Length: 238
Image 1 (cartoon, rainbow, N blue to C red):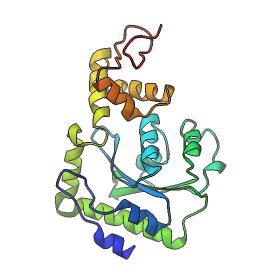
Image 2 (cartoon, one colour):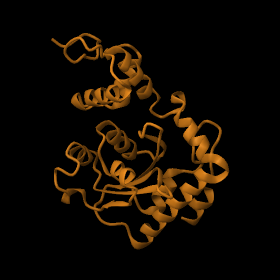
Image 3 (cartoon, one colour):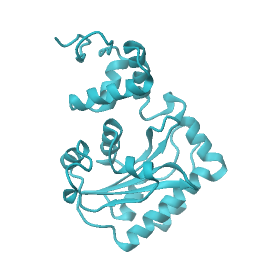
């Protein structure tokens, strides 16, 4: 972990926010994956740093469904530890829990990045095997969270990062932002409702939200509010 922390640095070249290998962080913490999401001005979480594997789909599912451990950690500004997802009541995250089981995620650990009472985002660790983090792993996760916050604050890097969140073309979910705007125009509804419709469609048809958004941007999918839910060909379902 000392080597991981030494390698952390802000990035300002438009190719990311954090200059370090998230896989190395995951290995040092004894987990299978790690992801960092920051809050944009509309309070949507944007992935800025993620390890390969199930962490990306986990972040996408939370974004699509609007529920999950990362959402709760950011909302309440508190660490959230769930070492065994099979022990949670079904109504904890009713839409997300079955999806996590299909991804093979057995435990999640979320650490908000706090500056006073302001939450910049959340660091989410996930592991296939159920069980708590070791004492050393917990300490390292808290240290890493503090280090990531410091990196974002260092030399105005957090300003650069948050500015990037205002430029949709720079974002991991750029297509989602563009599609939300198009749906807002098509259905003549506010952006917040347009995003909800996009999320609902993705969940209803079991498709990644990015994939659905790309269909909207490519005009293969239309959300004009003049009939039944559209299909991927752009024709209305009868």
